[in-house]
Amino acid sequence: MTAPLLEADALVRLYSTRRGLFGRPTTVQAVDGVSLAIEKGRTLGLVGESGSGKSTTGRLVLGLERPDGGRVRYRGVDLPAPGSRDWRRLRARMQMVFQDPLGALDRRLPIALQVREPLDVHGVGSASERAARTAELLAAVGLGVHQGQRYPHELSGGQRQRAVIARALATGPDLLVCDEPVSALDVSIQAQVVNLLVDLQAQFGLGMLFISHDLKVVRQVSHRVAVMYLGRIVEEGEADAVFAAPAHPYTAALVSASPHPARRGRPRIILAGDPPNPAARPAGCAFHPRCPVAASVCRVESPALLPLPGGRHVACHLAQDGAQPLRAAV
Ligand code: SF4
Image (cartoon, rainbow, N blue to C red; front, side, top):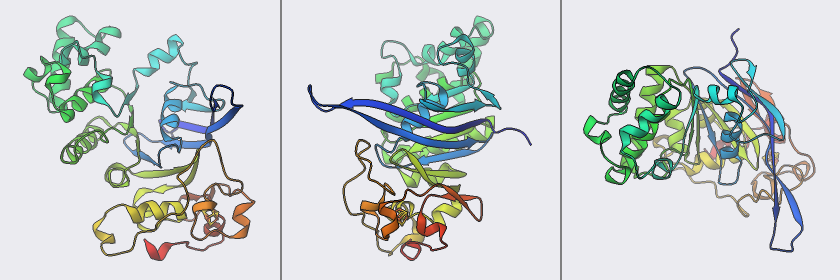
């Protein structure tokens, strides 16, 4: 059996925060034992509310942040130390697409120069080969040569994100980490960029980690999906199966709030309590203050992420006992 493109094992990331100038420092566990695998040509969707740790997870798997625990393997080999020469070489194979294309681009440089930049940095081919490759990349994302001559502010948001994707593809990566890649775009443009990512994945066999709070978008692109809550994965499985029949009450609430033709007319699950605060993790199951079906055990015992039939993993006492919490509502 070949190793997945990328595997993360029990990743941990701690941040130290202080409330006010004289407040006591506290440690926030932003990512707490996250394990995941990304296969070639497949997309793992990572969903959760703001503060769930999904963006931090994305940065950890690329080595943009050092984990405080756990390890990341690329093609079965441990990721080199972040910042090292081996790591920089490997980064050409693993690229990131961020939420804000304007922030990711240099406003003073024409688009084509920025798409070409990674080829120059890595010394790929001759000058004329790099120019030809730049035109190919622009065409692959649906941009014309004339748009390559423009500056970022002269393009629409969707065109800018296409340029960012073209630049990410320049070095021929086999893994893309996309962090909220369409959230800053108009809804009408989101579908175009999502379709572009799906097409490019089919064309280049890319593995993708697609991070988003938007379940509708994740549903469109993902083969598998992992749901995060307060730094932990609470449910993971084949995307179609998870969306059709979520086993964790938090996933059920997210699915119920996401518009989908199959759910038309069904009530939405309204979660009680505040959105998660990573600095104040509740005891027991961290979701229990908001969980509509919490039992007494949930307040004292943290559920482990355990396998269920069908290749699914769920961290919920009730789901592991064979109950289907909130299934009827989804
Ligand atoms: Fe709800 Fe309990 Fe399951 Fe947590 S363990 S999601 S509180 S039922």
